[in-house]
Length: 537
Image 1 (tube, helix red, strand yellow):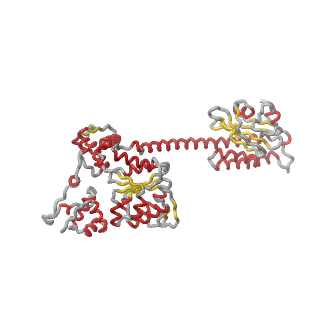
Image 2 (cartoon, one colour):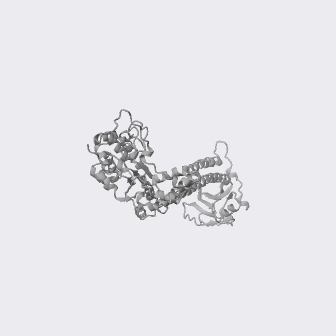
Image 3 (cartoon, rainbow, N blue to C red):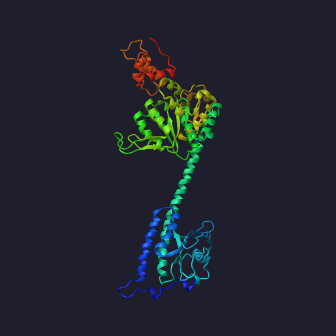
């Protein structure tokens, strides 16, 4: 190292007689204020790269250290690449690069220590590739370290010729480099954590996309291939989809596939079963509510529409909502806006709607139970899922898929005999795929070795599920057994419940409607759709 790099304080730096101000003291106050400003810049944001130019600007404006330069180590080459230059007097090209030992900046890379030049022109190894430094002024370069490892170099130039305080300025630049290093370490940790989270997110997306991909969906029959093709086509657009089909046919599975294979897959897929909530709670659940809107509303809450903004909202059992609520739903489908319960502010959302129902909505429209305008708003792209009995050829493949799933839960391998498969193919499957899964899970539980034969395939009827209750002695001998059926029994099908209520009401529809908590119009609709033969007395 040349001797002029090591600076000795001269007499000009000493303090004047008592009563005067020491120039060193004045500089320290100035640099302390600048150090505080640098710390504010670095703590203001984790966007480290954006903060570096502001740091160099502070050094220029507050500390009199102009022509700041920050270079960073390239992890691939090990060289120093110029990252940021602040040069208000001229060009600020940052295309230069330094290898170990090249110029003063490369010398710091080779031997990480502070370099102080009283006058740049006196050092023949000074390259000044950036053409920003003035030859007659001093120069300071210090290493930026993270955890003891060199990560870059901070270089500045005092605005005036040497005044004997180069050592004090160099110490200040070292403190700034330490702050930059700490900020860089935090930035690297955040970047690493963000990278890890992004990798996990992408992995989850790929997993979900594969799980709900059309190619992974079970069903090779012609009718199901047609459904998959239609769903694949509509997934590309924001078109509203109405999925029709009996209970247990996989309507939610198709809805998931449409969402996760659409441009909205990066955003949320929000689900709501419209039949699971009474009307007052359904409104709050969908639209949200403001604090104090009703008893128990202790804070504001976003509804499903807001949660699904930018994504998809799946409304299952859409045929069960009441006509008054249908009008509220129609508005948001038409205008894309609504107000929370108890609020007056209009909220706009961008949501794709996928609805599903097992009801015959056309008949419901004719009966006056479903709004015609809402039906046409939902029925833009209808998808009809066939019942399992209409695609018997898919049963073996679906059964294998379900057995794999059940086997994973039970942590063992399950198999199905040919006779068991034929037994499955002969059943009507009123509960469709959901019933098939329950049947196979029951058979797997009964199988000790995981081998499922025909004797373990059982289809309990409604009467097998619910033993008949003994007749009360006061009941007439001719009373219908159905009159004794508990209509609240969850094992009863909807048709059985309606028939039981009609039996109890002497086949008076208005009275049966009151037993079931329905309106006469609703029970008349169910009698028609369930093909119930009405007895005449």
